[in-house]
Length: 373
Image (cartoon, rainbow, N blue to C red; front, side, top):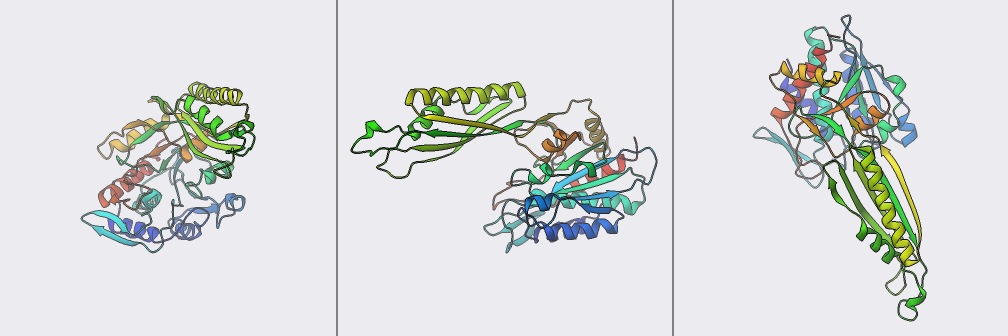
């Protein structure tokens, strides 16, 4: 049984450690000490060196204490979206929040605390369990960089769960999209806007014409697209010679994604041809999508663990990416588990003590379930 007081104490201690991307060292030190105390072998990969950070991804392995079990991975990320130093933590009416201009950091320190307490509770009980690997990422909030640089050779799990989503607690992200970032450049010709505008070719006008032809926003139930940043020009009275557009497209169907990216390319080529601007269009695969069927082993495993707590996890399709996308792409079946925080990435972020405890109970149930093959 989880210890709610200890869980809350660990969570608040984690929240008070400022850990933006590349500065997760103190969180890693705290976790390494706690995990070694419960019998884990702790190591770090070289991701920190590659990313110029304080530490690499933390990989802790708890050996099985029974035969024939499941090799289970539980994970979260140690960085937060913005500095959290100087916050005033408030626990009131069963809600954990903060006062200040920063963020609470429940994304993803609630996931960390839940995994730590859930695993520790099983170890203290002496209950049988399979091998448990606990994987704590760096640099998730800046492009999933920690998981992209993970040394997958250090992972020996059958499948895993990443605790990194909001409400409801314990929900199961069954599918997530493939994501491509798109960098578009238009090169025109500069000219004086008042004296000889006809001699110029406006790169901004070309970009505007291209964007106006694109289908953006919710393209269909599986596909989205966005032109998020546009920059160009040097002065109000100069026909802009260059313009850059940063865009993206995502879909849970790879064929639809390819069609969407091609349609955005077509729109740019048409605009370039009409205006006389030169075009560069580069699409980069940021991460692959994944989809787990109802009868996938990790789905059945999670449902069995949840049934011991009296609930059935909601199966949801998601439009965002996570470390799970990277792990699935590296060959390790993984899915996101809902932690239960709300208003993430804002000063209003909060989580209830009950949701935090329920998440820890789910982590504990998963660890207990690992005793079976």
